[in-house]
Length: 159
View 1 (tube, rainbow, N blue to C red):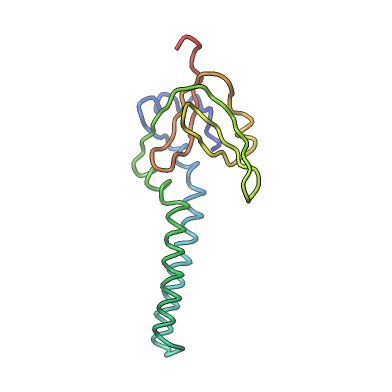
View 2 (cartoon, one colour):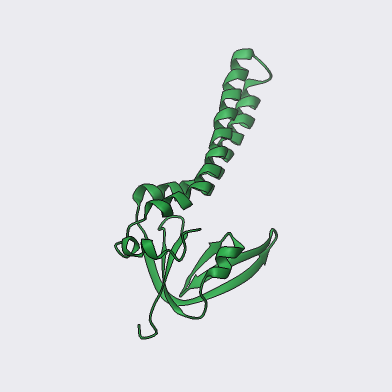
């Protein structure tokens, strides 16, 4: 998210390309997702080990261990998989419209959104959210799968 309002990346973004610094900004979520995939692998190793050690009921071990592994894999993909696909594809999409900032509340607390036309982008960092423009026409650049906002270009009032 640190690359939002990055004038040096606008030319590449206009051509529909993701820049290397923008791709790097997506890595934290990929690494978090990889942590859960690692937990899934660790869990599967434990299930396989339990068969060789003859510990407990193999059916129960496979059911519980396999279920946990599938859950960790799903969580890992949901957290970082879409960002990884976006980096591998290397493309960005655009939407033009009036910018607005919205604060919402859910069970975990305050959630920050930046809206352009009909698309809402979840913003993780308060400082980033505060730096974003409001009430003007902008072109937002975002990744197609994860819908991660990667750049903003203010548009002239005549467009």
